[in-house]
Length: 443
Image 1 (cartoon, rainbow, N blue to C red):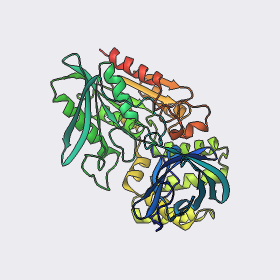
Image 2 (image 1 turned 135 degrees about the horizontal axis):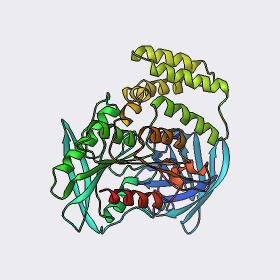
Image 3 (image 1 turned 60 degrees about the vertical axis):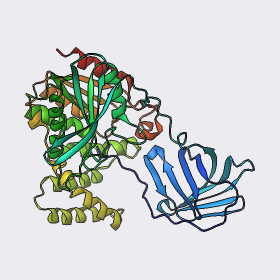
Image 4 (image 1 turned 90 degrees about the horizontal axis):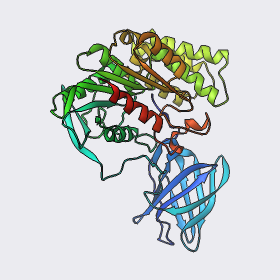
């Protein structure tokens, strides 16, 4: 599902100044326990960018940067914030104040570009103990670029295609500084399973798609990946499956139903099994509850009106007018926010997702299924969706993981589970182990 970041990117403005002490470099610190990283440069002009890894916001362009002696001032118009500080004599720390409505102390310490990011202990590092090959395959006019990993041993391997969640993802499904698909591919290949992961349309080495693309269109990319694997001599063509995360899980279901002769098994990780409308209504409820602000009856009615309008829509312009009126009825909504929301909610992908009912495909899936959800997933509710999986696919192996979020990360609390970037673990080792064992058990 789509992951939202509240930080907005602004234009870069650099202040002219003379070079003083050594402010150039990478600086990390915490504002109210939220880690941030400044990248400060000087090439005749002082300039800076800001990372907020916990929020998945990287390379935020700062405004005017001024240096005077041992003092620095950095404006951040996109955040309506600024930082003022003084560098230590050893040039390794800056002590100052971060102001964003309120003023908070902030101590920055010098770091390296690599160390500025969170530690990701699961991220695979070369040399790899398996074959890695960059590949390209076609889906009509769309060229899709990916990476195929195969075990060193054996001549014919079970194989899976990894399909990412909604939004434009690269082949590693890179989000919030994590690379879940790189970790999954590494683990499965080490356990004897070939893995193909690819860049979504318009990302990395893949061709650009259309603004009209929906989940159904993206499903054709996944089956094209399956067809590519079937063309290879090093793949066991009787054991090719699709492993999909979030919307990718729905894509796995669609292809298992429509192409039973090609898709031998599927695994859905936080896959939606109820309609997009039901998913999104429940998502709003869970987010509010997790933040300690449960929705009241009026708010629930307001949300229902929005999704009812989308579900019954037949004309984009009429839908935009209807949604604008509904959103304006809430005086707390700002005009700029309303325009942005309406633009998203009237997009072909969004409208099609709200209307899409997975049950029409679930009843047609006859192959083996591994269905996994985390109990702390506020985007795809485990109870709501796994109940439908049990009902519609009795052959499915159902796994509900306690205390894991939408990305299958463990955390210390339900609220902490929402901060994907702050969690070092990319994906649960238990899930990886269960998934590999299940695939290898298939006859």
